[in-house]
Length: 582
Ligand code: ADP
Ligand code: ASP
Ligand code: MG
Image 1 (cartoon, helix red, strand yellow):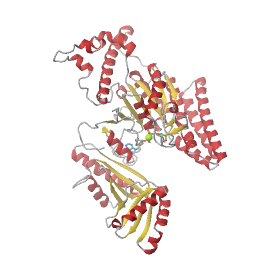
Image 2 (tube, helix red, strand yellow):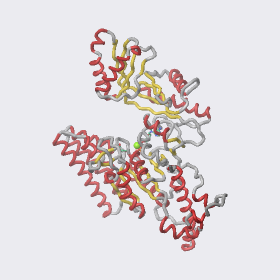
Image 3 (cartoon, protein in one colour):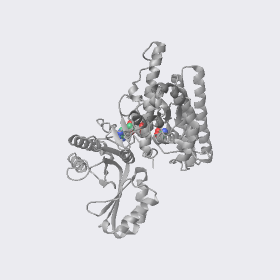
Image 4 (cartoon, helix red, strand yellow):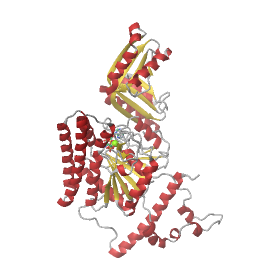
């Protein structure tokens, strides 16, 4: 069976070598023709550090006996002659030039830009410079989110439509129209060209208003209609980014992912059918790439086979990026965001959190699943098998390395650790005597939770005294869950076999993720001690099933200090071990 990772590494290495040699040839030829050693900057161009857009693929798999290395070092057994195995252009570099003209393949990069990266005209200008630099050396597919905050506004518009509030809906769409038009006017100074993009913006806004008006008349908003409304943000940002690229001389085309990403009909959390998606991407995007056009694809959305628009879930443009990467067998996917990659904690909570340079798909997935907002939990699913590397980079500091996610993660095997935190949970405590001896109580409690339905945020816990069960549910569902539990245990509460039900409505979950967390002197023990020293009460705790995480529950008002205290321990343990933190 062929090894896909090795195949990828070989292809990448081959492309890199061929391109490098061709580039040297072209540079030499250009210099001869123009008399200049380097291309002059066009007026108004900012210099972009080429190091962040280098053609060097991220793939860390070493190239074992690639075609190129074998050509240079023929087999010692003197078996097949190199000329029989390798194309002539590899053995005779002077043939490269003509070969390249017909046949060269540039590395393919998928570059996804999040909401803050396309938040206004000046952010979009940064995006344009990053894409422009990359497009010199690579084929590029851009995936964009909606401008920051726009999807929230659209969700609000949908809610207002459901409530029948025409006026609120109109205000939201007016605000969105104005915001996008303002950006368009800055990005595209020429009146005529700007008018074209303004017409697109107005048409999209009218789409949204029309869908909401239908919903108001029917007083009903199906998940299908919600998806059609909430997906409008990306349909507004993609044409804007494409137009801004064109304005700076980068051939580009905005494409709606409803044409490309074929999904099931699970509205609000749709899953792609990868084979169909691959076919569509090949048919629609490959010809554009061949002619050097940058495709600017909407993140977040897709469509069913019948063409009904869907969304992949909130925050899922990361996933759209890796779906595109997998579908096109890209050389790398870069998720451009507003922080320096994945950090040891959310920098909004811990300003001193540090970037993690390298991690494995598995480590990144754990962190994302346990709540690190920087990555959508499904991001890694799409391309793990193909071994396509993911980079997380900062649009606002593109010279910084960010984080590289690969199959094996860090080469030097150091311990990987980080913290995540989320603050929108309620903690329900059910008291009975020796609950662990009466599994029936736990089963009945879980059935009551499922009837709400509420998703447990933490595995149900017994207290140390064994006479309490702790259940953590999303804040919004805490009261209905207590209601369902009261109903289930009415007679038990009356006769005293269940002693009480209590709700702590505003709690936070802080999770330590990584390896070697437990045992004497382990990080978890040290974090719990430090929290006690700081008088931060731990209301419940849970060891993750894989032993690579530990979650503790604190009052919401204690969350920030708990994270800071835990992070201090994490940093000192990373320092002591001489390792890095996840
Ligand atoms: P984008 O719109 O680019 O997808 P998001 O807002 O979804 O960006 O994710 C980036 C944000 O994730 C950061 O601004 C940061 O506040 C938050 N975040 C949470 N945990 C982490 C972490 N461990 N590392 C980096 N950022 C994190
Ligand atoms: N715009 C979508 C959201 O806000 C998707 C994304 O930005 O990743 O959820
Ligand atoms: Mg995001």
